[in-house]
Length: 289
Image 1: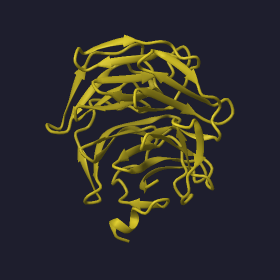
Image 2: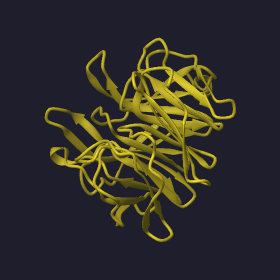
Image 3: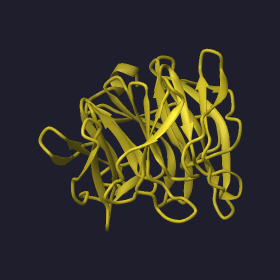
């Protein structure tokens, strides 16, 4: 199947598998139309965390290894600003939680340290607007966090914003316009919206399904998140009308702890944990709404 044939609206298409160990709780970001995958976890009990970084080029359907992160980590917050990856927090050796912030420059293929953030946490979520990197929730050594923090690349400083009405661990955080949307699903699921202009939160109610944890993205001003059910792979929330809808398509991409990212008008899903098969994945899928 050719590239143009694969990019059919409403159809899931599989692309080149990442040539590395399957993983969950990794993170990904898009720079110049290429997908970067960093870190993750390849085993639990005990946990085996990763520090490798890979770059996928959809134009050639190929993967290339890039410089490793300075240390292993999974379940961290990641954002893209000014053509660079910013990585904060997460879990490392022996599941120790981190508060370090590091930056990857794909031009020089190097990592540098930035100002450390608030208290160490894993399972936090990240999103960016302009020069600001927002980090929400996660689990500290004490409890699930309700805190929202903002890192400014211009000043290399952190500031705390209004606390959310509920804490989320391993939620999907997405920026749409001037607002942040964060979600987990299922029994007791939470869906929240933060307005950066008013520094205020709105509770958008319980999500309609048992969503995959950690991965979410936005296309065309809409929020996309995976569902764990094999017959209903992905849901979309449209802020303009305030409602959810079920996307059509193949059921073969259902998984949790995966990366969702947007390249152009397509949603890309990479890796994660397949609970039915009991295995961690390295496959790559693309969906055009």
